Image 1: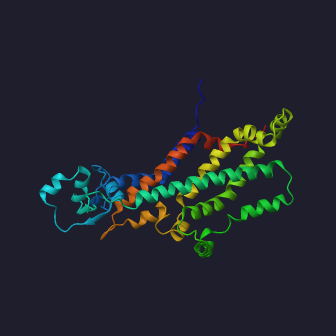
Image 2: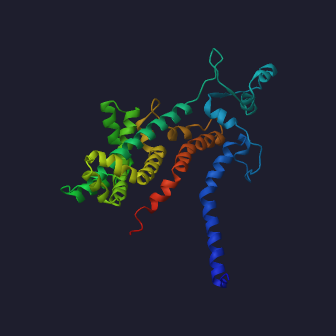
Image 3: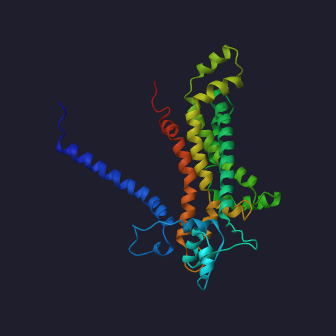
Length: 319
């Protein structure tokens, strides 16, 4: 026979559901609004009251990916009819797509900035996680003189706000020729993620019994073979969780990307706000850039969701 809930239990259950719904609205509301604005016509982006139901279009994405200019008069009927359907949407918004002398569509800077973000974030994440895992293994398995001091020193690099050292770093990078380069950003992001990677991975590796490695060493494995064949598979959950956090940090970083880069290695975060358009800001283009920028992080986190959930509780329950 099912237990009968008291009035207090029913009230607490309903209050918990209401609270959960409110939290979901608060956290998912901005994401929904950015996504909706990315598919709105420009004239509906800032309406009061907000327009919730509309016919979606992809003109914000077309304008984001191409260079365009304002037009004072409507294009000739034959030009308008000969244009592709996506270019007609740009014409309807009072703009035209800029073409070269050969008639080729001129791309905007967003695709190259997006590619720069992928190169820098992926490379720095791989370096930070790999070096952090090896360093954490050393601290976890060997006795090191002044271990606590070294670990505190590594952690202290996260205590200083990055913007405090931005100007000295810029001057140093300019002196050695690393400003506006992929390598410069990769080194910076790796350095700032490394301390987080070391501390997080040390907690995971500490939970892996040393007896596994001892048994492998008795069987004739070298220390390096035991690390790659025993420790790394056991630490896969921690590596995945650490990679997610390092990737998100590198992917979203704004201050250094704005100060240290100009054109060649500039990433997407500083570029997106610059796409305000001429005259009134074109918020649909900014929303389209933001929506595309959210996708890699969302996909990466979704693919590693099982590891991430297990990683958050790894070591919480001791046998």
